[in-house]
Length: 244
Ligand SMILES: [Zn+2]
Image (cartoon, rainbow, N blue to C red):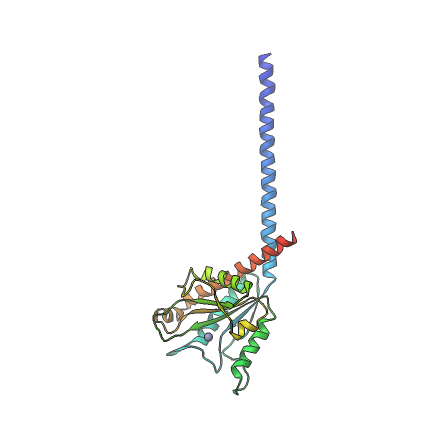
């Protein structure tokens, strides 16, 4: 009798435990599947976005100057590196300029405004835009990156924060908060989430030296690109959540 009870009791207990184990495994696989599907969908939604990159100045307008170093050349190089990186990740990228040109047309009064208007026309065809610049200031001790967004734009602020989060890993930040601006033409007239990034100060010796190094420009380009991707994936996630 004792033997019989034991013989029945033990396998039943194991049966229950192994059933529980199988249930756990099945639930685990389902959760993993769901998570992978969710992540993939988020990626697909994010890569559907058109990224607009705007290297500041160009052509007759060199931007900030420090000896032979010109802002227009540095920002074009960084933007071209960003474009390669983002395209490798599956994003479609449009540049407002891909050469040493300005978009203002003839050298006549209003050229600067026409240049900015032409950039905004391109920007408004995308889903997200980053305009890249270098700073200059009389106080040569000022250094590091800053990111501006249109005051009142929650999406702009979120994009700026995403870029700062990645920039912070490769470059000193002059201010680690997204900086709101009320009256910068490009930000004010853009209809999509847009930020202006100042990579560093050409008026500062350390920043200038670093910005002249191709390796550092590559680091900046990758950091900014990762920031854009993070922003797009976060937003794709929230739209998926709404859809679900
Ligand atoms: Zn500039």
